[in-house]
Length: 238
Image (cartoon, rainbow, N blue to C red; front, side, top):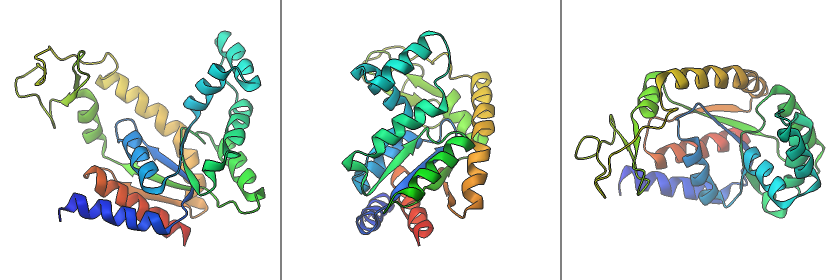
């Protein structure tokens, strides 16, 4: 059995024995956090809760919270923590969250983390949040972002450093010239990294101080990273 297959089986076995509870998945731009969230959803059968999705969903369904959010955004203002908290609170009442959920984009501030901790502590059978950060070194992340090339026709994604097309600058599938997204540049990446670190550092230190934080090496195959996250959550839950 290959390393990848072994890792998947390990993750599935661990995941089947564990009620994971709420998991905050952290990672800088380009670490593959979205990919790992999908892996964990499959392993544990729990939902991924994204504040962006919640916001769009409330607006699309024209809920009371969505109408308030739409009005605020229409004025060009940021949706306040209090409104985001209300959306999260409503989502956590849904039955599919009973065994746990993957938090994506929330809590992103210390105030949100404190609010969530307080809410979960007040729940009769609720487990506390554990935070797992996927770590990849800066230079590797830079190569992942700036080396990315997309086919505008079939949407296949390449990387000139790690997964180049057979013919330079051309899609293997349909021969279409590949394009680089306008924000896949070193300057934009540096700005995004600074913003991420400034926002995330207080949240990381909060959960580290509570003994509910772990780091996982993200420069490995997808299944191996997923198994590492499962192991980290299992350790933090002991």
